Amino acid sequence: MLNNIGLPGILLIAVVVLVLFGRGKISSLMGEVGKGITSFKKGVSEGTAELETEAADEAKDVTPAAETTSETDKA
Figure 1: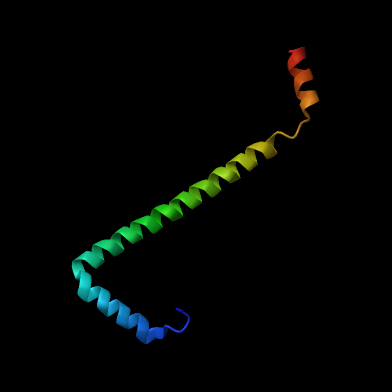
Figure 2: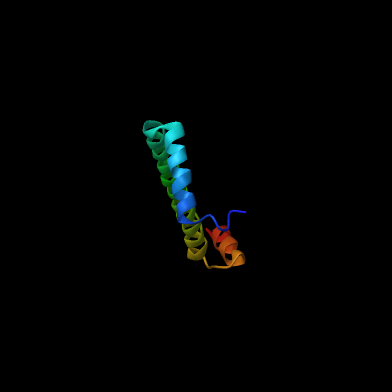
């Protein structure tokens, strides 16, 4: 249905939306969309950093569990 919309169709839709809602409402809406995209990117990068930190913590301790418990028993 929307496969053949093209540039003229997009421009027509943009003009109709501008006429219906006005410039002020659209600019505030786009500001909110921008904030949402920014917070999404921040969340994705924080999640990736958390996963990398967990992987690095797991990679640090490479001794087998049997050796680790026997060393703590001796101390």
